[in-house]
Image (cartoon, helix red, strand yellow):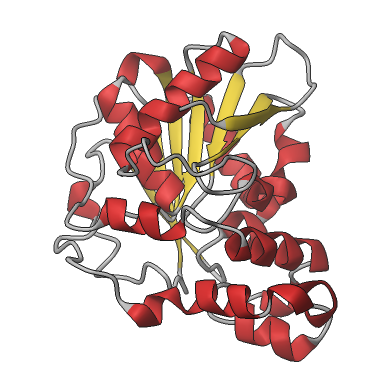
Length: 264
């Protein structure tokens, strides 16, 4: 299927950089770094099926490899761009890894921001407690616009996501909560991960950086940060005072890490 994508109106001579969001999220998750990245790249953001502006398609396979192929197809169909730099967060990071293993000649570099899929023992079923954010966003959908201005609700929604939750802007919280509340693809994408992990080979020709926050409660160390599953040549980083959305907690640093990875 063709995904909804957005490209910044930066210099056409700049190299393309595709950003892929995570489960229950949307392209808006990357707002804190898009402006800075656009100084050096043509930034392309993607809404996965049933997320953001892309509708859910019952014919679309929702496993990470299939979603990666949908990203390839959509970017080429929309812009005529076949090869690009790539960065992804959470599920988007897993999708990015699959893309680099599947068609490495099309990936100029890869930055995984707390990528999923790096676990030795894949989950065999949904764990209701792990869907707490989704159910909370659905329940509070009518009240998000006003409610997220209250410190109490923002703490409930974001204290486990970011150690800097008190510093997150209202826009970040509202965008992410709205994306989650409207994510019809949440459970289909979750089901697409069940019984799987990332175990494909990314060749040395693709520069790779993988980073995790030191307080990632969504994909915690060590169970979801198995380094042996990552490309053996990757640069592996752990960021202090950082949760599961590094581009929210340290936007300037993440911009620099992505830029440095593209120059390797």
